[in-house]
Length: 285
Image (cartoon, rainbow, N blue to C red; front, side, top):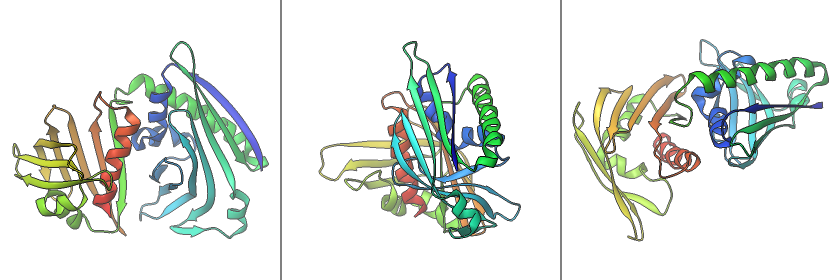
């Protein structure tokens, strides 16, 4: 293995470039330089397991099994590759897997005085593949620049994904049944959802009480339904007008839940992504 290093300047702040890198919708676009249909499953927080894969027509994965070795928003991500996925089978022991493990892939986001940033990539790759990887990264940088210029969603719409071993019908029931909503609708163990009301109809409203367990804080999380197609689609507008879309896709081993929501202005993008991802993980579990 040898280490390659590349960098490119981008005309955005590190926070926005970070979103471009870690958001599933944008990730699928810029990684086409490496593999069409490439995606990931997992989170970009330190210690998290994450899979960088593509899927064939039968839903079988091929790609890399990895771990986020370090994550400091919005400055640095270190990915440690631990194994391969071939035809849906995890491989840690074959010669091909051992050639890639352990290997590091590091992203550094450096802020500049003019509000823009430099994106630097350092990656361990087999020596015979170094030039190919360099060319793919340069292509990816080009695609990142295109995405920033052409997409109005970067930093405005946050996309989250979670796989579940449950069937779409089971996730739907958890999503729309008030008593079941109370079992998963919280971002951390010191919060809960003591009350839930739901009128499941176009134009109908839901109201979920989000409260700290110590009674120090609570608020109403509510909205109005705009599109309902059980068990695949639930769209709504929040009380402040922001739009949320939840799509549920059947998979051979369960389902995939995708959630897209318009970001708010009070909290940074990273905190919003973490909080909503925790709730989505509870739903999927």
